[in-house]
Amino acid sequence: MPVRTRLLSDEVYEYLLRCSSREPAVLARLREATAPLPESEMQIGPDQGQLMALLVKLTGARRCIDIGTYTGYSALAVALALPDDGCVVTCDVRAEWTELGRRFWREAGVESRVDLRLKPALETLDELLEQGEAERFDFAFIDADKPNYRTYYEKLLPLLRPGGLIAADNTLALSGAPILHQDSASANAMRAFNEHVHADDRVDLAMLSIGEGVTLLRKRGSSR
Ligand code: CA
Image (cartoon, rainbow, N blue to C red; front, side, top):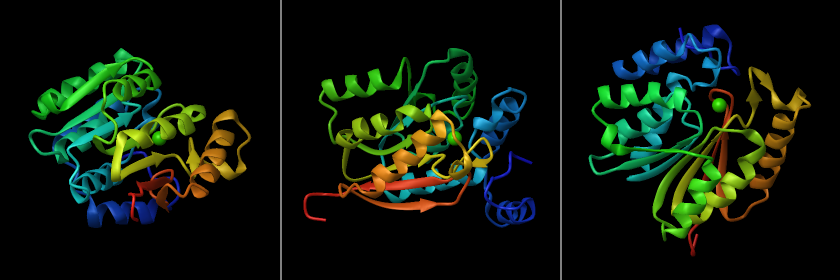
């Protein structure tokens, strides 16, 4: 049983998985390999990985950015949904985490689609912009240090094509508790992020109560 989604009862979550989960075996093995780690609750649930794969397919994404690799579950879920020539740039600073992910990317046969950047994600985003990658990405996932969410979002927007999608994690809860009732730097940053994107007319948005809350943000084009 994966770490349960925090916003549903155990019973309802188990039913949800029973009726919808199609977690590929390699993702299940990565989940098992991550479970003993003290930070394993940082890993997204199988339902959320499946949602991301669906979003990649819905948007026809070929080029993606994943901020907060951890042990590579989201990068793998995205890579498996990409076409052969697709690519996901995944950003983290902890090699001991990402090495575990690399093992499973290889095992899944999608290592060539995963471009790991081991340095602060803000540096990677700046580099992509400097290298002329503006509007060349289709999909991005933010699940990293919360105080930087707004900066990640602002740097991702120019990298996304009009119609491209950002999924931001932990917009309702952190470590199992609603951000509404937390007074921490991370929870305060998430509330400020939520207010910022709600008021931002550069994007369409929807907030989903999956996992610990995911906000989908679609970059508006010139006409709509
Ligand atoms: Ca998260």
